[in-house]
Length: 191
Image 1 (tube, rainbow, N blue to C red):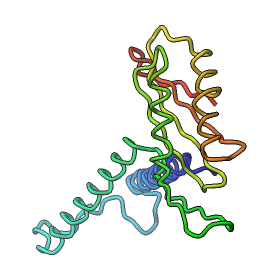
Image 2 (cartoon, one colour):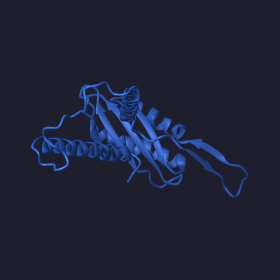
Image 3 (tube, rainbow, N blue to C red):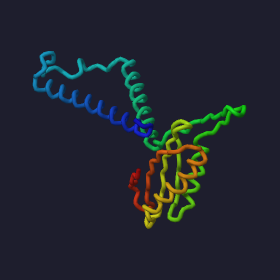
Image 4 (cartoon, rainbow, N blue to C red):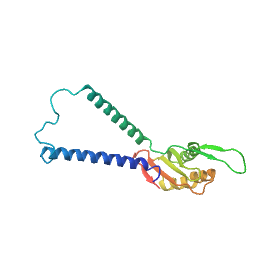
């Protein structure tokens, strides 16, 4: 599984488990209402007694609500930015002493600048993930509505990606390209 699909798989898993738990709770409530559960009487009260619960129960409910709220906020923030984090590459040769340190965000910045200079492109963002010997390039490009998609894709792969391959001295760089049009906010994935 690639690093860009892990959040999607986690989202599907958590949402599926939550949905399954809610369906099971609903089915149990309906079965209890119709007297199908032997360990629950249908005429019993939902909450025993009419007195207020102890203070610690209220504090526990508040703590659980705050924790759930923070987890939901974390999930929402993860949806805003789903690109992989930049990594630090260290290279060193046997014929010279020392090590070169390069952040992958620094290596990807010129690619975004190249693409932004193309006709019909409003903005571009680039991220590199993976190791130094096998990097993966992730691009998000916002183009004008009248842009020629085939020409833009050809130029990105033929010019910007080629220059990056030469700079990193690698033979192949897998590219994922998300193309978004300025007026139409629905992105189209091109691979």
